Length: 223
Image (cartoon, helix red, strand yellow):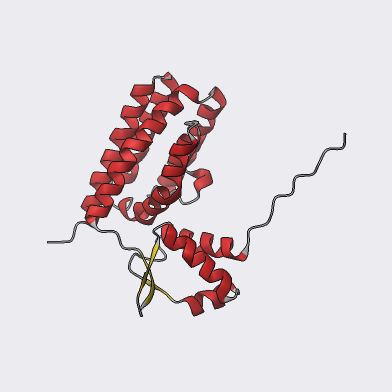
C-alpha cells in the first residue's frame, strides 16, 4: 500500500498578520491602549484589508484588541481587577495542569524541560531579563501541553495565555524578578521530577501567586 504524503498548509495572510500583531503585543512593541491603524498595518504587511480584518476579528475574539465606536481598534488595556481575576484563574488551572504533568511526563520530557530552563538561565544572565515570547520556547506552555488534558490546554493556552503575554514583559522589568522567577521555575522542575502531583501543583501555584503580586505591584499607579 502506497503511503500518502501529508501536506501541511502554509499560514494564510490572515494567520501571518495575527501572529505578527500578537507577537508585537507580547514583546511590548504595541502597548496596551495604543490605536491600531488598519490602513497602515495593511501597507506594512503588504496585504489587502480583507485578510487584515480577519486577523483583527481573531485578535478581538481573544481579547487582545477592542473596537471603539467611531474611534477604531485599540490594544486592550486590562485593569488591575482584570489582571487579578486573570491570575486567580491561572493559578487554579495551571496548578492543576502542573500536578497532572508530574504524573504523566516521561524522562525525556523532563530532560527537555531542564534544558529549556538552562537556556533561559543563560539568556537571563546575558540580558538581565527573563523573556519568553515564542510558545515553542515557553516553560509554562511546555508543562501545560504535557498535562495530557486538552481542555486545560485550550483554557490556558488560548485566550488566557495570549492575554498574559501582553503584560509578561512589563512584570519582568522589576529588579530581581527575573532571577526570582528562574529560581521558582527550578523549584517546579524539581517537584515535577519527584512525580508527586500535589508537590508539583503547590510549586506552580506559589510561582503564579508571586507573579501575580509582582505584576499588580508593577501596574499599580504611582502615588
